[in-house]
Length: 467
Ligand SMILES: *Cc1c(COP(=O)(O)O)cnc(C)c1O
Image (cartoon, rainbow, N blue to C red; front, side, top):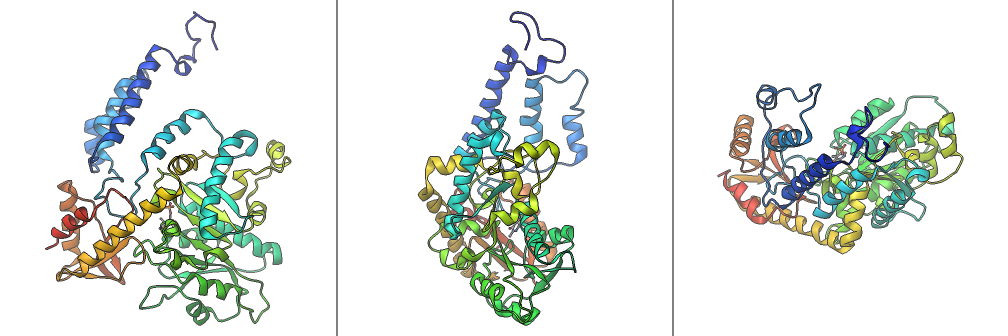
């Protein structure tokens, strides 16, 4: 801090809240408010590196552009070169439709300089995050002792959970041999990539041909009753491509069945990164039966629970197992470790962490759980309407009746090039963002409906372009 009245010391100028900063604050807050008030938001589109070089030029200079100019550059050139994932007709991948409250509070989190890795440093934030985690644990039916941490995304969540599962086996029997992870052949790509990191061999298990679900019977058929090589079984609660919920109860039965080798129950990881939000919706809650028996569970609030990027809730039935796997040991950390408090960094890959569960917590605290149930149910209602519309149109063919809010279908008579051209045209016209996917090797379309602003009219308008 410098003497009152004196100018900033060299190197200190950027850290002062002076008149120019006050002006910048007003501009930044104005930009945030204007973006939130847009209805609808522009869909926008990517630009090539050459186009961006021409439009934005060199942004890092010795003297700096000045805050106002850098902000203008973002608002006028860079932001329009990013798709708005909350546009009502952004229906590809999994959109991100944060509530206004969650988005606004993200600004507050950013301004609060909270370290979310330890109780010592971030007790208040961790308390709030833990209440949000408890809400999810209660929906899932996990026991009172369950707990975890908000990590950046489902990939990190799956990695952290499977590392805990592997550690549990190694704690029992040492590093004796290669271990396997069984998952539906349709499980998310991150299961294969995280198993690669962990040197676990993925066993893809065929799903039921009619329902698309992984079942206990299929696990038995693929692996037999000797589970001694398994580090974990992954059940997907809402597959990314079709939104299918595995038969979690029979998968849990498989994990707990007496086994010919005398193996203790196998770790059950439930990947609800996308679909876990369905736990809050009474009309689909029954599909998730068995989740209460999970050893670990993830759901991404940045997918279908209306939080901004990046946020995955990772929960463990027995947090002590996860702590044993994840706690980093070092002389400079002993001061934390020895306190024995709830340190979020002990439950996942990563040490330093933003208190990224807070935007979700704030919105949930402000609006209450019932509003979440209503919002998830609304998207399910639109998804059901979408499926009915597809089924009623002769040129379209549903891949499967949706379990949740992903509706996938074929356009009869179309080759892959037709789908691609259609998708590119819709984006070029700033009408919708729907990219092709594939089911069993055949190109298809999928609409992922997680934005309560997406209405039946939006779906009808998109389907009309397929005539
Ligand atoms: C999206 C998704 C993931 C990966 O989550 P990220 O947040 O993108 O890392 C994992 N599993 C499922 C089922 C998903 O839908």
